[in-house]
Length: 335
Figure 1 (tube, rainbow, N blue to C red):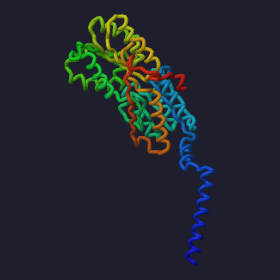
Figure 2 (figure 1 turned 180 degrees about the horizontal axis):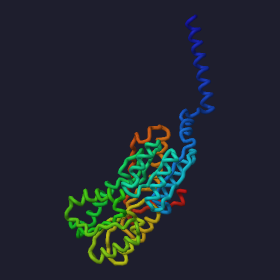
Figure 3 (figure 1 turned 60 degrees about the horizontal axis):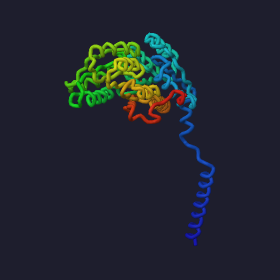
Figure 4 (figure 1 turned 120 degrees about the horizontal axis):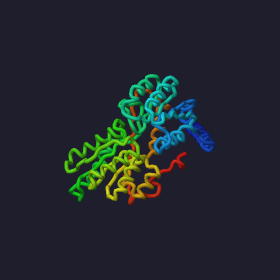
């Protein structure tokens, strides 16, 4: 009898426990990580220091970062040096004194901000770099792998212009600012491949300093000197609007590959045959990566400078023929 009584008592306890559990489930269960998640962002401040505002890359990054962080309670500010590297350095210097929780930096070149970024981390500020890296690695970087991009573009130009594939091997390169990561690192990638393919001849390699007017003038001269130019690469699609204009005016057929953040203007220019291919590194996705790095830093709270996270952007080669609806983005949809 005692054994039966004990079993009945145990069954009653289990039944009561089950009813309580069922009742709690019916009422809902709080996410145990939710409160600490939102608490990690309360009162935080993030400041973006671009090369300049007013064009697709920086406007797209700013909109994406703001949309991801402000709903969490993060204050987002911008310090715009408007293409002036000295003004950018001064902005970072001022921010070191102000001590925001994180700074997002778009470097004009590999060296100008290097010491300042190190000082910012030493002052207890997280630093995330976007798309053009400094020689100093900070807590985070989100952007294109320019060495890898250069290698892939070089191989693409070989497909289009090598004598083995019906071309004459003559190609041109239109760099941006020579000391910018997008130029310096990409040249390394191009050289990694072209140096092993002597049938390819770089007949012109000049810098247009991200200026479409300068790119147009340079390409007009190149085509006068090399009217049989087969192809080439430019390091920014906005700059290469000028390159493409010179090619169209010449009446020559040149397989021109450019690159950028995948803004709708790039797809429009492909449709108009301004250039032959665009390599997109997807600005909205980069903005999401930046925001995710910042969220991780704020939640895990490593010492600034202690971790080095790199998130390279997937690259998409877009042609007029392969272009699909939604291949490019518009700023209006990201604000």
